[in-house]
Structure formats: structure tokens, C-alpha cells
Length: 134
Image: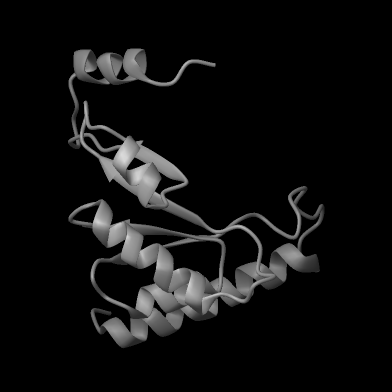
């Protein structure tokens, strides 16, 4: 099933069902209220995933070129969401050793380090050691 429109329709149906399950279809119900947060991924610069994500709790944009793109995305999400919609997370990925500050300033609520599929242990330890302190 490679048709993007069909995949999008199935995703929307699946997210609706998941929300219904969490709103009373499961026992015991989730502890988080109003439900477990749902983040939707979408490839930059496609706008349909932005509209989908704005109906939920967050977005994990893929292939953002720079923090300016995230600023644009954050503004678009603010326009799409009602004022009383609650918090919305925007996730940014940076390479090991990257500076999270510009991404945070652009509106990222989460900044994740992106590693190759088989990272070297030293590289992972270096990122952990340089991370925020509790």
C-alpha cells in the first residue's frame, strides 16, 4: 500500500480509534489526562501532516533544514490550533555535538540527538556527558 492518500486516511482512522480506546475503551484507562500524548511525524515541507498534527499534541518534523523552518512551523501550528487546545510539542533533531539553543529559540520543546543506525559507543557517551545536568 504505497498510495500516500490511502496511508494518510488509515493513519487518521487509526489515531481516531486510538483516542477512542484511551477515552474509555481500555481497562484500566491511561493515567495521563486527557490521554497519552500523540505526536505526528511529517516530512518537511509537506503541509498536510502539519494540519493533522495540529489536531493532536505534537509534531516530529522530518528533514527540517534549519531553525527558521521550525519557527515557520511553530507559527503555522499556533494558527491552526484553538486557543484552549493546550500544550503542543515540537521536536527537533540535531547531529551529535549540535547546539540545541537555536532550535529551542525557534520553538522546539524537545531537541533530540540523531545518531546513525549503528552509532559508536564513544559518540553516544560524549553526547550523554555533554547533556543537561539534573
